[in-house]
Image (cartoon, rainbow, N blue to C red):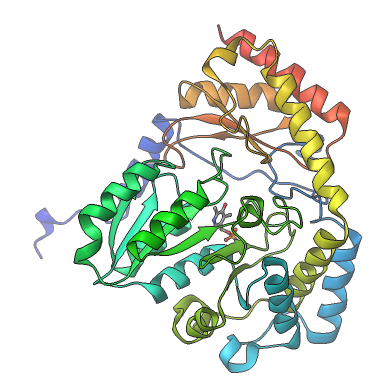
Length: 402
Ligand SMILES: *Cc1c(COP(=O)(O)O)cnc(C)c1O
């Protein structure tokens, strides 16, 4: 190629692109935590109240999970050395899968190396070119990426829009072979819950599979911590339940739970399970210990709800923003509370105010979400003084804005 039509530095556009990201206030960087995970953490040499963690039950620093991980490492080493189908499979994986299937009341379950990979591999295994995917517009990135990677025709329906979903199916279902409906159960950036019973009804009418992503609900919602499927009385319905071991279960990895034939099929057809190294012994053992705690200690869930209710009522009461309903998750029993803000700069400013008051609660901005917000995640291990400090600082911060 001629020199004059080729850029002299083919990587130069990356720096330009970063500049654009910075100008839009979309630039992100990492924050270092120097302590065990928990309701308070050490950052920058300062103790910070942590309202940014997905460790809803406070298990990620629990000594029992640590001990389980250490014991598994001593017995089986640090790495699993291969994919499950080659040298990576251990009895611990089977034990964890059986525990997940028991919790979910499904025939079987399969653990992946992350929730992201569970979604990617499952969607790609189940649908392809001749098929149709209908996904909630606010679905998690891993569901969206899986949908695109599958090669299926992808249509997004309005957030929790049952009528819109139905309309798309009326229009497009007949022209496709399989159809898969994808939805978060608890929406990670909004904290609301999908209308699962209605979605299942429509799915039955149109002959569709349903995959529900329980990442933020596993261990948290439902009488036994099985998730939104249990919370909404859909246990035993024909659906594909996926979730993560990395949030309330305090470990790392993802899972899919469902019928024996579904799981058997995924072991043969999910590329992100077949062609990746098996979950490490430490992660597997920690997740297994966490599931046992979730089932044996329902009081952790109760404490979490008490904290969510307390925070919700004190943040809404007397708040000048009450009219515009600052809490998207008003009625749903979920530990994610969102404060919508007019733009990225305002969200960053409030996040900074919180930071200066010793509170870690991030501004979530485009492109992660369509509109900027402060996202607060609640833990069972937050103390009343923690909640009070957050409420006081939020209120003062909002007053300052105008
Ligand atoms: C976190 C998350 C995932 C990904 O799970 P990882 O185990 O962290 O990869 C998938 N879906 C949703 C809704 C999530 O919030």
